[in-house]
Length: 261
Length: 252
Image 1 (cartoon, each protein chain N blue to C red):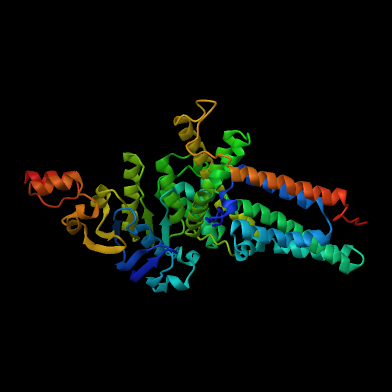
Image 2 (cartoon, each protein chain N blue to C red):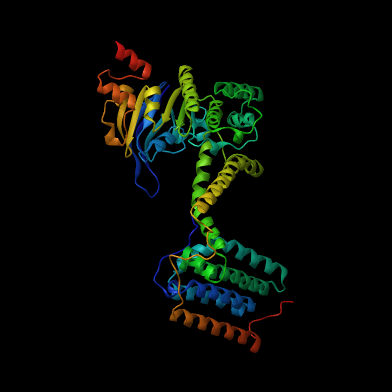
């Protein structure tokens, strides 16, 4: 089980290179993809389910080269949750909305119903089946977007800024969903600008800068490099912890534990 | 994405006031409608091409490019006339003339769009007493075409990621499939329009009945000369058509 990106270049028509020779691999893990605006994060992510095809280089998902397979075929393996959930809702009921993906896969009605129930339960939207997608709150819409992709049972899940614009409680529930999906065996890659989210969730961080991969490694190492060079900064918690010498911590509880010891 | 036809050149047509060009366009359409005989319409088409090239510096290749989408209509016109008219070769000739008249209309409209910026065109309409709101509506509509196009592409990507395939199925299946893109697009458009209206109002749009413009247009000497020449041309066309009785044929 492996996503392999080999010497990936991407050039949008008439513009300069968006990705320049990126090499990257991921398996069953939680990876954060970070970098300033225009660094190529979304371009890289869109290669992982074949929405974009490499200008040069290869992207291979579990042995399938994206150049030889359609997005529909790859959607069984890689789920992609777009930044704006409203860009995908068009059915009159939430049940139908979540069933759209499995229907496209040509599954039996029983299988579809079972998957919809499972996906809605997973994102805590059980009982919402007959409501319309547009009647939901921002956080619920984001969870529904995840359910729409989950119902296709992909091995890998890509989330583009999953918590942007959400309030604390909604963001918290999206984080819980990500964690539990990882525990069930999914490989997860999320794009974000929020360093708190990286600190809390990511096992590994990939940093893109001007189309090149400038860092790829464990989260604690990531936070020890000079992030300001890339227009990023450490979360407050880490700045405090580093300056008083308690080192890398994931959350406040861990920090207090170390501090008291 | 072809939504703006303007080609920046240094020519007589480019330098004229948009009001004069709008008048000229209207005059050209009237002249075209005066005549129906192939002896006039066919040369008129080539004359129009030549004039656009000489006065507007729009090359024949550029003119051909905008006319190309209209060619099917030309062919259909010729074929239909050849079928319904006796003798058929006379019908075909009339078909050629009528088809070319249609293409000439196209040429004239494109000549206007290719030599006038959107801003000047709308300003021209406003100076001709069209309400400012309509002008703004036109500008916004044109401005948002590329934005909505990008949005549509983005929505299509989102649906593709859910296994949606436009290419599969017959025409009816495909039309039904389009709802997966059209519904989110429509909702996003309405939301954008609503937000835009709030933004406009919050920046004082409509606060005063009369408003000033940063960029204005003014009639110069050459504009009056062009207007005068347009008038003379219409006069000559009317004289040829009704005075001399030339250029109009009885079809039945």
